[in-house]
Image (tube, rainbow over all chains, first blue to last red; front, side, top):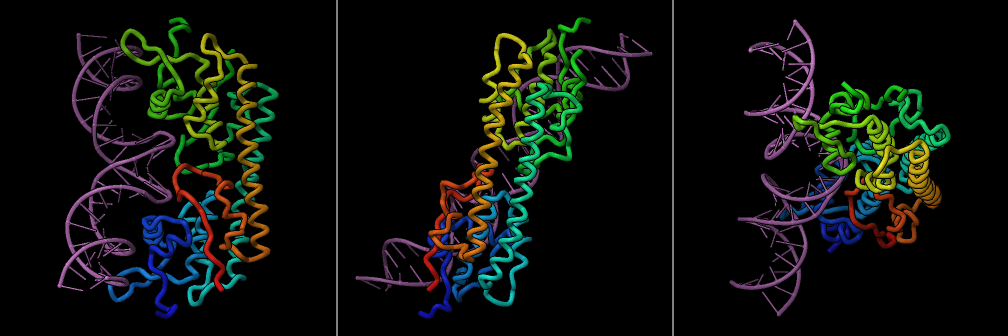
Length: 151
Length: 151
DNA sequence: GTAGTTTCTAAACCTAACTTTAGGTCAAGG
DNA sequence: CCTTGACCTAAAGTTAGGTTTAGAAACTAC
C-alpha cells in the first residue's frame, strides 16, 4: 500500500496522542480537513501530525480553537506546509504569548501596589480597571467596579 | 434601620458589579456565607464587598473557584478580616501569579528554540513535555506526545 | 393595604472543549 | 464466510462558571 493512501484516524491519534473523538471534533471546528476513502473513512496526510501538534501547542498558550483556526489559516492551502511556513505561524503564536505574559505582569505590578496600600476594594485600585481584565477563559463576571470607602 | 441589618443581595451586587445570580452561585460554591433575615432573605456584611472583590481579582489571575475558596480559607472565620489579613492572602495570590508567569515564560523560551529549529513535532521538542503543560482551563487533550521524524 | 420591586428556590439553559453511547458499517485475518 | 476490531454518525453527557425562567413569597412606598 502506497503512502498516498494516508493515515487512518486511529493511527493519527496514536501519533499525536490525541483521542480519536478529539480529532473528529477538531474537524467539526474546521481545524483539520481529511479526505475520505472509498468506504467513507477519514484519511490524513503525514503533515497533519504536525498540524495537530501545532494545535496542541497553541492550546497550551491559551488560544481558543477559533483563534487557532485563524492562525492556521495562514498556512498555504495548496501544498504541504514547509518548515518555513511553520516557523512563520509560530512567530504569530509568539505574539499571542507575549501579550498574555504582558497582561499578567501588569496585573502583578498592580497587585504589588495593592498589597502595599491594603485597599483591595477601592475604585481607584488599578486592579478594578475593566480594560485590564485578562478575559482568562470567556466566562466570568462581566464587569468590575469598586465599592465606596468604608468610612 | 441599623447597619447591623446588613446588605441585601441586590445592594451587594450593585456595590461589586456582580450579577445577583453570580453571588448566589458563589455561595453555592462556598465562597461567601450570608445569614438570613426573618423573611429568609440573604443579608451580607460590608466586609463581603471586599471578599467578592478579592474573588474577582483572583479570577483575573486565572484561579478556579475551588482554588479561590482554598485561598480564602486562610482568612479568620471568627472576626472581620483586617487589612493585614487581606495583605497576607494577597501575597499568596501573588505566588500563584508568579507561577503562571514563570510557566508561560518557559513555554515562550521553548517556542523560541522550536522556531529556530523548525521542528514543531519532534519527540525531543521541549514543547511536548507533558509536565510543562499550562493546564489553562481544565478541559483539553489529556496528554501530549510527538511523532517519529518524517524520514 | 395594595401595587410594584426584590428576593426566594429549583431547574433548565448556555459556551467551550471534549467524551460517551448507541446502533450500524468497513476492513483484515483465518 | 465469518468474526473481530476499527470506523461511521448523531445525539446526549460532562465540567466550569454562570444566566434564565417560572412561580411564589417578602419587602417598600404610597
